[in-house]
Length: 89
Image (tube, rainbow, N blue to C red; front, side, top):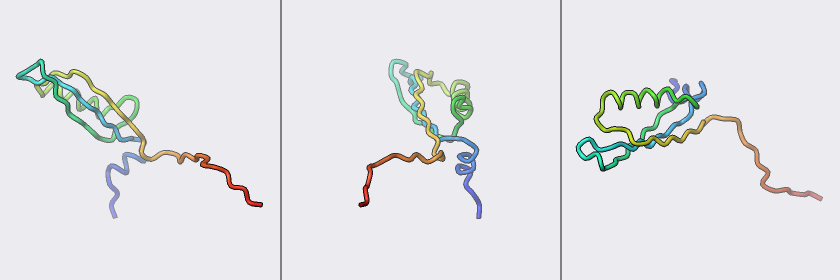
């Protein structure tokens, strides 16, 4: 049985990172377009996202306008919350 690469990355400390990339349309710079990127990445340096944004600036014509990032580790210590108290006798 093989283990998925995503699960292996999570065990290594990677979390799910989602970035909303807003960029200018190459033919119409006054118009903005958005692109959503998602991958497993390491907080706070985000090497995978930086690699993708470097690729974007080198290869694609749409100039970056903004990048909004959300990140969460999917495998983490359990949180215990008190939901109430039950008294017996």
